[in-house]
Length: 140
Image 1 (cartoon, one colour):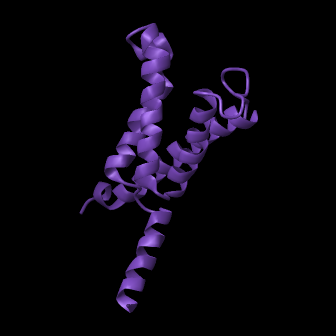
Image 2: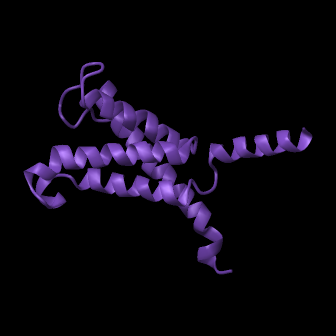
């Protein structure tokens, strides 16, 4: 087993943590005007479609992915929200992400899709719950 095989789960965990943190920070900035504030220049009104809901998904989904809690489901919702953002807000302006400003949406979409298929890696809270369930099953 070489170095790459031994460290794969750790690197995947670091990738998950960084992507989750960046996504959650983006949502917090939009919802609460912190960390440099919202990119649009204004905080969306509570419940406003799609801005408030997108930011809520970013904050909650990003935090769940960061923690590794319900990772695959949270990453799927995050990926879908970024696909929606790309195809509704960016792609109609032009085909290429560099031209339509959709690079961030495309990168987050594909990054979260990677987490959906490869899982959370190491250091995920999901693993704690799996171990607790295994111990309960053995004790029963």
